[in-house]
Length: 343
Image (tube, rainbow, N blue to C red; front, side, top):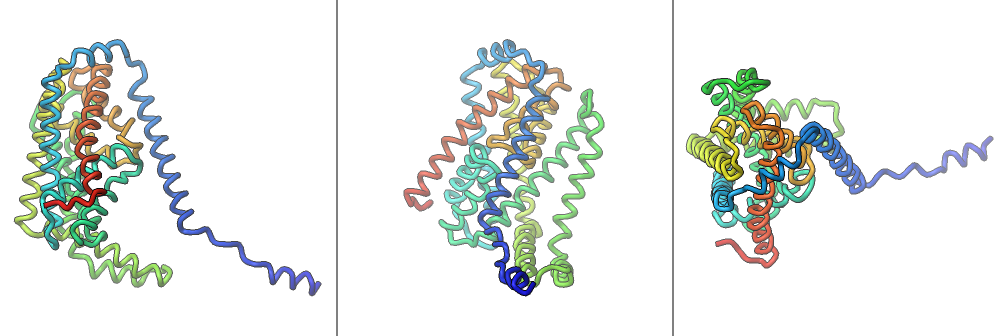
């Protein structure tokens, strides 16, 4: 009995799973969920599609109008960089070329890598090139995403309330979208003021002691990004650029539709851009495959387009986006690897 007890007591404990392996498993689980979401949305979006009609629509594309759409996409890429720079410059000084190349590389990563890895790419590039802490850069990235979603929600509600309501589910979407946008705006206004309360909650929470400083640090970094909006000049600059980007994206959508012979109205273009931007926050495969097809079919068919035309439009739009972002993003990554310092 004593020998058995001794043998049991001397049995070494099971080794803990290394943090790297845990991260690998989490990444695999996230990719699996994204693939499942993409498969379900693709099934819904593509069932019953007349692929011959899709082919005919794509074949008649006007190259000149598609080139104009690509030029507009490049312009909005530059404006997105300027908008992000407003938040970065709240505490640090970042040059326009540096933020442009980082933005392009980040979008390139989001198009071709899973789990929105592009956000980490642009965070690393700005931190490495401009000496800004990664935690602060990432906080501005998250704040930019949140604020952009709020602006899109509010403006989508304005479109739904101003223009004649389209048939289908969009007819009843105005009020919920408006409430969501206003709630988000109130959150940005109030949340940065609740830092002391957040620290007190974390201090009293039944959590492991080593974990609490990390949670406090993460909270503080997030609030630093949001506090950038508490300056009126930065707030109006960010919102103004967001509105300009939205209008240019909508114009590019309408021109892209005209290139395929598809009559996409201004309300349809505005709501499609909002749906694509908000949908990109969901777990997604590289390039948002599945999500973009689902949004295009859901938004464009109530405005009179067939499912086949909606799929043809979004396939051409995605291909054009890959080309534009692929060019500027790969050039930005090449410059970074060559050690070319932005001016």
